[in-house]
Image (cartoon, rainbow, N blue to C red; front, side):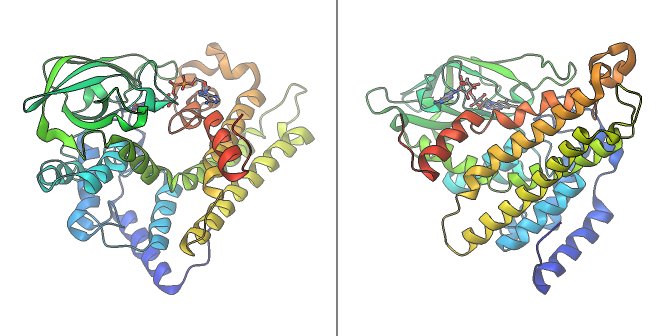
Length: 397
Ligand SMILES: Cc1cc2nc3c(=O)[nH]c(=O)nc-3n(C[C@H](O)[C@H](O)[C@H](O)COP(=O)(O)OP(=O)(O)OC[C@H]3O[C@@H](n4cnc5c(N)ncnc54)[C@H](O)[C@@H]3O)c2cc1C
């Protein structure tokens, strides 16, 4: 399922596919349990470095930054081919996908030298300190305070949900530097060394995977950070929050479309299992109807993504992009929930499912994990608000 591209684009695809076939990590490595989203294992570092050296890490960027000046169409092909094969570019996605572009766009030459190349080459790992106990959807309400004292910022406050903080070397942290101006105008981005005295990351367990501990609370108590670690301008953090996240979201729909297509394939396999009446589930018209619906959703997300992309390329506005995160993440969640429901009590019966219940591939685990698509980067409710106000032009109240 992909667009008809021109000859040059298909040549790009062929070169990429041939390269992936030779260099991509083995399925066994890809399936290895990971400790957090900032835990760069040996093979993860080596893989990211291989991508970087070959110009396949960030193809839209120039060669000296791990790219090959790829066009927008070529970048879409790139993300499609990786999604199809479920190959991650990095084991520290926030570092590569959000923080590296922020440093590229807003960093000083010294910061680019110190942080950008080591991030791209997987020599350092990052966390992203945005959310706080009282500031998630309403990020502009963040309260962690930084006060400039001579050549240092002194930071006090608390972050939460900070993925991988306990394994990260650095954190791109958003702090309040002015309380007198409108909320979003008093926020500053600061690069914090996680070994700084007064910075404490406390990881907490997740329901879905006892061994995978990604979330953290991060506490700042009189943490002194050099002024040179300021990213962008003082009180200029808000555009960084918006710009960097947009980089990451632009092609997310491709992952949703392929994940949903894979869920449909798994549902078809599940269809061979006996239902409550002893007959295969696929003989039940309701089951068939649901699976067909998800197959249509997968195609629709892909086509809507292509349409939004074509409009974007033609310089037109593309409301499709506002819809895709909501549609993609929720359709996938419904398909995974359907799998767990059709599996029946076995889905949660440890005696039947055994340790497998907690493993990759179990319907119930995949469904629980799917909430990580409908919450970060703007929850589904926030997406609906955006669509209502900006796409449909409905009144705010
Ligand atoms: C897997 C995962 C990884 C994450 N990683 C990070 C990370 O690395 N760094 C980081 O800083 N944060 C991270 N987060 C946090 C994430 O950004 C927040 O969870 C998200 O912004 C929502 O904020 P909240 O949890 O405070 O919920 P809240 O904003 O408190 O929302 C609670 C509920 O109220 C609803 N709601 C809120 N406002 C409105 C409104 N105006 N209209 C209608 N409904 C509303 C929400 O939709 C939600 O259902 C991560 C979250 C997840 C799930």
